[in-house]
Every structure is written in C-alpha cells, then in structure tokens.
Image 1 (cartoon, rainbow, N blue to C red):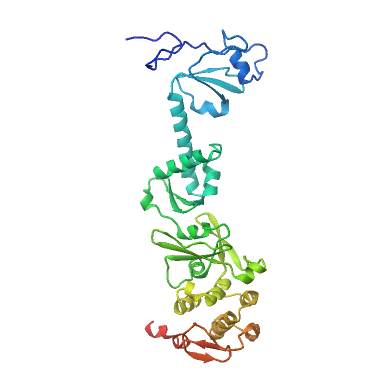
Image 2 (cartoon, helix red, strand yellow; image 1 turned 90 degrees about the vertical axis):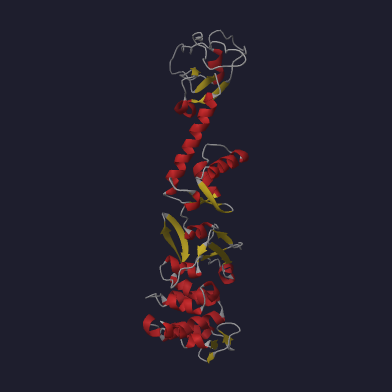
Length: 372
C-alpha cells in the first residue's frame, strides 16, 4: 500500500498531493511575545518577508475559537501567538467545526427548556445565536435547521416552543398560558384566563384572553385559541395599563396577570369573554375574599356607568359573603346611569331601580341553582 511521504496528508485527492508542510517555527526571543497573524506567516520556514506562498487553505482564527475542535489532520503554525494560522489539508475540518457549532446549539436548547419553554424570536436569538452570526440568512438557516430537527416548533409568528429531549414535536406539551403571555410584549392575562391562572374558574376553556396595548389578530395552536383585546381607553389615557395586576411564576417564567379584583370588574364589563353570566358568577363565587377598596378604585378609573352599576348589583347580591358595607356601595351608586340600562344588551328582564339595571330573569333568580 502506498505510504504518503512524511508531513503529507493521507487524504485521497483527485488532483495532486498537497505539498509537505513544515512544522511550527520556534519563537525567538521572549516566548510570551504576541505575534499577529501576518508576522506568524512570515516566520514560516522558507517564506521571505512579503512573499505569498501557495497553500491548500489558510484560516486565521483566535485560539479560543478553534482549540475545542482541532482534529488530527490539522497542522498549526505559530501556536504561541494570539492567533493561529490553520492550514486545512482537507475539508474535514470545516465539516467538523460545523458539527461542533450545531451540537453546542442543541445543548443550549436542552438547557434552556427548563428555564424558558416558550420564547419569542428575539429571546431565542439572544440564547441561541450568541456569537454565531449577525447575518440574517445565517440566522434564518439556523432557525430552519432546528425546526427540521424537531428541536423547536412554531406556535405563531415570532413565537416558538422548545421541544424537550426525547419528545416528538407533535407530542410536545406546550403551556397555553405561556403562549398567551408571550404573544405580545405588553400582554396581560385577563378575563376568564385570569381566573384559571388563580384556580378560580368554574370551567376550563380552550380560549385564552389577554390584554395588550395594540390589537392582534386571534390565533390558533392545536386546539387552543388566543384572543387579544386592547387595554380600556381610560387606562391608556391615564397610563394605568398595569393597574391592579400581578406577576406570577409559571413553569419558571414570570407572567403578568390581572388581579382577581380587576378580573371581577373586567368580567362584568365584558361577560362574553368569561363564558356568559352563569359562568362568570359561578367562578367569582368561588373567591373567598376581594379587596373591595381596590375594586371601587378600578371602577372609578374606568369611568363606565353601566359597568359600575353591574359591579354594584353583584356586590349587593353577595354582601354577606364578601362583607360589603354601605361605604363600598355608595361610590358605585353615584356612578350608576341616570336612565335604565340593560345588564345584557337586548335581553329583557327585571328592572332593579337601585342600580337602574334591567337584569335577565335567569340571573335574577339564579336559575342554574335548580340543576345543581
């Protein structure tokens, strides 16, 4: 069998064998002297200053980048310099270095799952693309690679979920509450979804609601539907979008959600986002305590007369359980509408003069309790 001469690569080539490469030169003088890449190349034995020598491939890289993935078929020149002039005899190094980058990225994703299972595109780049490339096409290629490999799945535009190791993408569990909370930068979980987060909802929905400073189209993922509403106008004008909200931890991620007091008012303002009056009242009746002063403050902040009357009617009906006093109802009475309003638009019922509300018969008589 043909043996290659000393110093020559044994990798088969269809053109001509590479020229033998010299060994690394010794550094003269101070061993700690840091040479640049050009100086190291000119110190190559047999190379005169300013001469260009024909080589298979020369890569000038920093030592901290290349040392973890050096192969047996690579020869290094100027090893004690800050930079390494790497003569790649074959394309083996390029493939191996690419594999090294991909394996390193895969390990990042596995470690990231326990901390942030759902990420926005910017968060994904911050963890995955650090030091990889600032080129847009390279970033898109890296993202496509991880999607093809089943490491991440696309939930909606700009939002991804990490697939845990050993799980198929189609079987990967994705927390819909995290998806809703990450759907917008200013997202606040609200309405029936807020009750579910606190474990106070009578029923579990596959619709998830959140408020944001900008309108977003509804989106679906698997069997879940995510709906966004804009913050009430009064809150936006007064810059009080986060009034009566809380930060709770879910799966190691902090998410913003409205408090139970704000949810009570919001659900009376938009009962359609709570599953209807029966679902709203049944859910709220499972809450043992409300900060009534905070409820009143939020109603006054909204400046909605019909909503104030609805909240006042609910508190009056549950005065004993919630320890409601007249001082709580007085400010709500001052905000009630002057003319009768329908509690449920277009549905007739019983007029409650104390609040100028026309209450549906089923709600006034709590008809659902007959089937309990």
